[in-house]
Every structure is written in structure tokens, then in C-alpha cells.
Image (cartoon, rainbow, N blue to C red):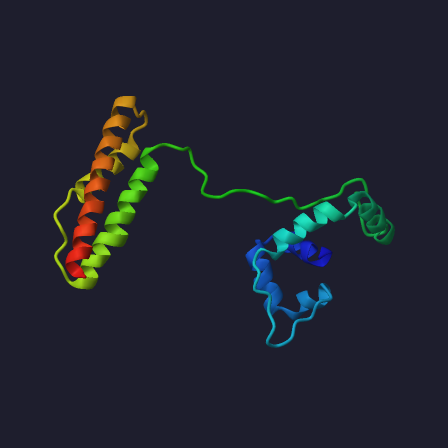
Length: 177
């Protein structure tokens, strides 16, 4: 476990990349003293994260630091510092507004459901205001100051477009089936 965490810090790579390299590079396996067979590989990409949480719960880091210092006394310059990897971050976090999920729902309904269904069944796309609303959405995103009134108008138009898209999708699915 400590060998895998050392390799992660030394290579400065993600958990997924670390497991991919561990599965393919036998020197990594020798370093961690866990040699996999020819047909074996680790499927769990969250293993380094689980190892970090296990080590944080069960390892006495002060005792570990003292043991490492006695073993590497001549090689370590700064004996008063201990570096521990505690990487934890969320991706895709953004400021919450009502308009973002509404627009994403519209994109999903029209581009992923309705337009693909029409392409698969070779039917003509139903008339709608999606392209106009897409232009309005881009204009809205470019605004530096978004007033309450503009937010309200944008929400109302996106809800109306979403309602129309869902009803049109249900009609097209009944016709195509």
C-alpha cells in the first residue's frame, strides 16, 4: 500500500493512470511486492483512494515518520518535514443557477432524444424554436450582468421549450412505434 502511494506521489499521476501503469509495468509490481500473473490485472480504479482512506484510519504517521527517518537518515535533507498526499477535490462544480440545468435538460431532450430518434426513424424533424433558443442562450451567457428580469424571462422560455420538447418527443415515439 505504501509503495503504491509512493509511486503516485513520485509520478504525480491520477489514480486511474497509476492503476493502468501498475497493470502494465512489471517494475511497479516489483516495487510494491505484488507481481500479477499474465492474465491478471486490477480492475478497481478507485483502489488508490481506498488505500489512502485505509492508511489514514489505521497508520500511525508519527511512528512511520520516525521509522523512515532512521532508515533513510543519510539520504534525507529536511528531516523535519513529512509530505502526505491528501488529494481530494470535486470536479464539475459551478455556481448554481436555475438556468443551467434547464438549458442542459433542453439540450438533452432535443439533441440526444428527439433529433436522434428522428434520424434513426428517417422522419422529418418537428418544427420548434430550439435553434432560436440556443442563440438566445449564448447571448444570455455573454451578458456580464444578468438582471432578475432577464433571469425570469429566460427561465420561463426554457421551461416552455422543455415542455414542448417533451410533449413532441412523446408524440414522435408513439408515431414511430
